Length: 405
Image 1 (cartoon, one colour):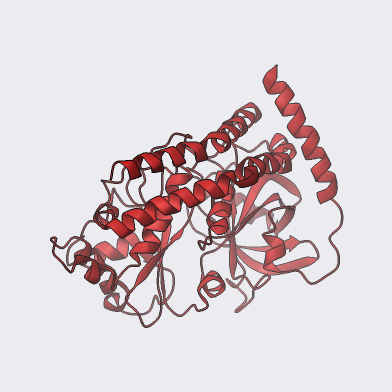
Image 2: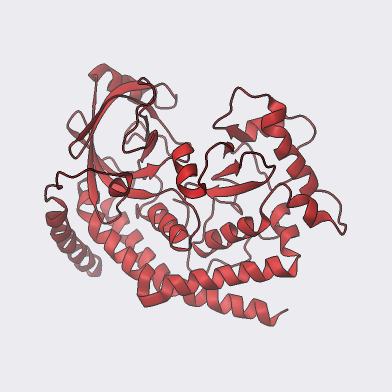
């Protein structure tokens, strides 16, 4: 009975929100900021050859590209490349899609973007974990891919609720770092990896760190700096360990990203259950120094009392960095700052409620989703409890850690 009342309240609010969102967009120049506006439930339509759609579903485990036109508001992009995407989230029922605008038309972009992901929200019953996590990263001033929600249609057939996800590519790098000439890698999960040295053979690094640009350069140019970084991380203790390691990685940035991931109770990130996962690595041009970029946060918000030192001893990089008092203090300071920011004026609670109102009616209509609508409303309630309790729990854990010093 209580669940039905909650469901009714959310749907009534969603209907009101949908009425506002359904108003025609003004005929003004649109930007990527408009596409990733979190206050708007967008509509994206793909038009494809019927046979290509059939093949895309049949071969959803492959990365074969097909031609499609994309329509958003008054903008139509013709001859984009579309393929199946995702690892555990691939589905022939509710396709996860990558859209490359310059696949068949050289230099073609959409709102200045080379590509976007249309994420099928397959593993998250609440369908809001990743967007809220990335919004919190941005709120803390930490570069992260932008996201918004859309209703997706393929050949006028409704596919369900999707997330529009900004690709981590040259456009992202320029927006966040002011340049895009460096080396970008997407981490590929092979087996449990905790930052150990992988040996002299560069093939081991090539398998895990997939180059996203400069692909025609030699393996030595691409992977030797990563090899050297992990070799130094695993070097025996001495007085210059930190100096050597920080030639190759920004330890303060790494610790900061871990702290934000821990606040959102991420179970598949830098300190994940299967080792390091779901991140990009970027090395600016003319340097040997890397920084981390978060990716794929649908396994976050696990439970509100997720410990702040969960798996901290398992990762070589974090464990050794944490031995330095200033980096330990930084970790606790970031956790405290995130907790206070999430709690300020009930921000996280309000974001959960607003997001649920925005998407509930579309979730109800989405017959391709993996979870039932009842499971969605249960997951929303769990998110509300997380938002209510997480900051208090983290602040208490931080205070206790400081007392133990």
